[in-house]
Image (cartoon, rainbow, N blue to C red; front, side):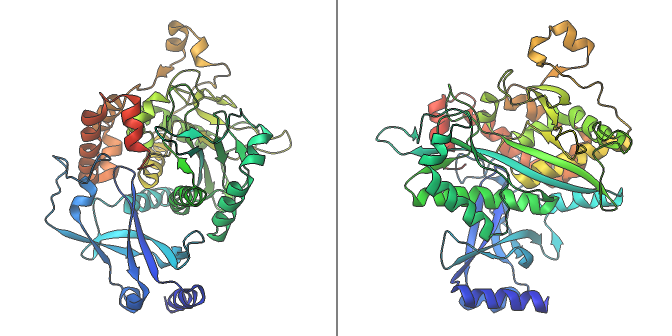
Length: 448
């Protein structure tokens, strides 16, 4: 701790930091912060946390009012404790830095803390001898504010170079700001929607991957705003244009070796990875309440939308919920991709639940069935039934009820977090399921 303490103090002085933002992400997937002035930093380096009301984990996306049946009220205080290893100056906000936090109730991690839940899931994996590496792969829109509605910054199609030319200053600044925070960008390309981009980043250990997802969303939105633009991570901001996913790439590691590929057949998944994948498919209807958790998410989850609308998997099959990417013929498999994920999720909850589901598949020796190498929507219902392929929930309400019945995920979340999360999402479902797309987007554009 002394070395870490000195690094923080040296960085504060070198960068002229005035405020340190204590970040957390709530049950609605909204990123929030309280900023501590560095004149009082010594107090906080000595372990003092930043207080928030327990009601913060009972707030739905619509407003700052406590939803019912969360088991939380405005009475009570918990404290955000900084994980000082994540302390970083913000290149897009001179004089400000941020640090990720775990929320404590007294001397114990708070039962409603999403980051603590992910820590528990990682510990489960380690107890079973596994390390999880992950990366979220985000799609987002760059939009110009208009008098009555927003408009995409261009009218290009997938990978059209004109989009890169037009938005080069914004994209360059985004990637430079990410690099300054230690987030390595692997690629940038225009996506299918006009004004839509995808920026895959390098994988990391599971906790870092979730932290990086928060930093990514914050950075893209902040840099876009400085250019007079709106960066939108809303899953389906336009009825007639492509949606925005946050595909989750995962790999299993043991003893320093990637365990995705079969050692004897490096272009086939290992039995362990197959069991992990089978666990994802088995729990996916319930997982969706955590990985695609907004009412708007389900306007994206449709057949033939490359979004994973069926519980199936395949090698390089972009219509299955799980794709196993095959690199060139000289390299073994190295990850799987869960497509049924979008940026409205709380990444700590989504990734933690995915880890738990996959580990359950390994523990029970589940098998994923044969890989599907065609579009599942092209099969008849009888063919899908014969292959064990089922359509996934088409609305948030169904995913919520699936989670409420999933004993494995509920046990992992714990009584407190499962109760508050389900309460928040049920409140959102009841309030928003009758909204028009325009009403929904007007609300969600400010949140994601």
